[in-house]
Amino acid sequence: MTTAYGLKQISSRAADHAVVVLHGIRQTRDDIVQPFAANLTAEAGHDACIYAFGYDHTQHLTRNGTYLAQELRNVGAKRIDLVGYSMGGLVARMAATDGFGPPVHTVVTLATPNRGALSNAQLTTLGQLTKGIFSNLISPLAPRTNGVNDLTKVPELMRNRREFMDQSNQSSAVRYASVPALYYNVDRSNFTFGPSVQMNAAQAAIAAVNLRKRLIAMQKSHDGIVTEQSNEITRKDTHEWAEFHLSVPGPNDEPSRCHAAVPACAGHDHCSIITDQDVAQLVWILLQETDWRNLNNPHSPHYNQLQASLQP
Image (cartoon, rainbow, N blue to C red):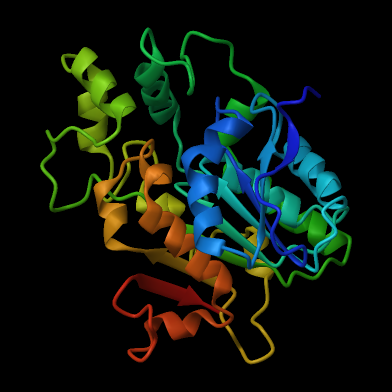
């Protein structure tokens, strides 16, 4: 492993609560530090120590999850939370249920394809975003890596993880939350460019070919890559058997799964969602709130700030 991988401490705050932030595909640890981890550090203040975790996106999700779980042994905090952006959310889910690391309290996934809806067409769209323009996502001309292949079979991988937990008699007290980017929503014109430089430049460069058609054809709401339906972790699908279904409610029946958004989410696509201070604030609210039912309580200080759906 190079020095770009592993844990990097961002703040030297409270040692009893650690929050580890994970980057997306074709990114590095430093890409998630600025601005997202820095914004989250500002929200947490002295109440948590923030880390960034770097991993090799070409490797299998399970391998990266085990690597993170092993690294978490060195954190030494009483409570550990994981916040994963895009592919990083899937790595976080793997680490939280790996069985070889310390217990994880809460996993927040940000613009993550939790339901595995990334198709080959969407992966090609990711490639078109970078072909000849940027290099922080996937090139469709490059050989498919283990990590890229895993993105197309998330349901299978998470069913395997559930079976692994069953066979090893693992119980799960992990809480899961999902946060979407919703720029391409039902109120948005099909021909409106996204807010990020990446999406805008790519769309302008290849407006005459298939990217625009693919964006228009995707089920709304979506961020240009991941649909909200794929991101949402609370929806009940009778055919699905994922590891997060083994997570049990809290001692007072607190929900173990939450899908939440703030108005700012509707203004961001897949690339820009990690730049917004309001999104970092939402993540911190989700981590702080001990009972997510309070988010829907009119007397909650956060009631007018966000919308949340819950599952036990």
